Image (cartoon, rainbow, N blue to C red):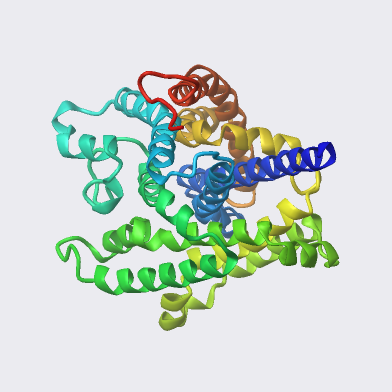
Amino acid sequence: MNSMSAVSKFDKQYNSRAIDALRGYAILFVICMHVLDHVPSLVWPAKRLLLLGTHGVQLFFIASAVTLLMSWSREQDHLLAPRTRRFLINRFFRIAPLYFSAIVFYWFFENVQLVNFSTEKLLATLLFYNSWSPYLIPTVGGWKTVPGGWSISVEFMFYLLFPLLAQTVTTLRRAVLFLAISYAVMLGASIYGQHLYPEISLEARENFLFYWPPNQLVVFALGFVLYRAIKSSAVSAWVQRSLLNANNVTVLLSLALLLAQFHPGKVVPLLNFLLPKHLLLSLLFTSWALFLILKPSNIAAPKIVGSIGKMSFSIYLIHFATLAVVSPLLARAWPLPTTGVASISYVFVLLGLAVLISYQVARHTYRLIEKPFIQYGKSLFIGGSTLFPRTK
């Protein structure tokens, strides 16, 4: 019994470490992408490399689905209603306090004029449905309540579905079926979406159709497949027998990501429709994560990346402001040109500063805002709480 308990504790420990690493890589990918907005003269080879960060949010979604399923599986209460209630309230206190604080912060930081205030956008952000309209994200200009807020809205939409999915998608076979259904939803939404909002530009509509939840559900479905694959003794045995491990799979993923930049869908519209780039990269991320979790390595998942991953939500919200402050200051102090080959050193210094400063600020927001509210959400269900008593 003690031996089994020790194994279980070890499994939980290295799973947690791998998930933190996935989140850490995800936020590093995202920052790489947003650095490009501040270095328009970056030479193309370096730009192509940083463009790999375009789909870091999809890696977040995959890691999120796995984390939620791990937490759900540890729940002792088998009644769906109380479990769902606890789940949604815990997730609200995990996301909302910092997210709502960011709305206030960015209002003043970006010096938004009162004339640009929109009650509709604020309400959509507070209720997490802003990813359902290009006017609420927005992809058509106007006040952005929180930069990057579309992904938080998509995440919360998934939370609403999660309890039912967690109760239903209980095997690897069912997870694959859920993936197939989500894939069909993605294709159907892509066709239907072409007729929405004809008054906006084609580029704005395509951006919106990428962001909205029906296009991203398939990524969360891959997280379900990953979790069920991890729990499958047959898959685990296959991974353990394989000559591959977290280190060489990381190398293979890096090469695959570089090749994905030459995605043939750019040339063949049908292929791009059937296998859009965000799905292709999510498939690669899922394969990589399988080995990172089942054959962990300190080389593929170093401690610093895991530390970044623990505070990835704070870093995600903070890094937009960090880049806006650091970029002009660095540009004034930089002794070399920021064009041509010299732009490569400039962009990587900017990237390093953005990560370092965002991480240091995030340590405080995590300690002062995130962690206390996470604990508060959990405390509502501890013992005999009169507000939310635990169902016997």
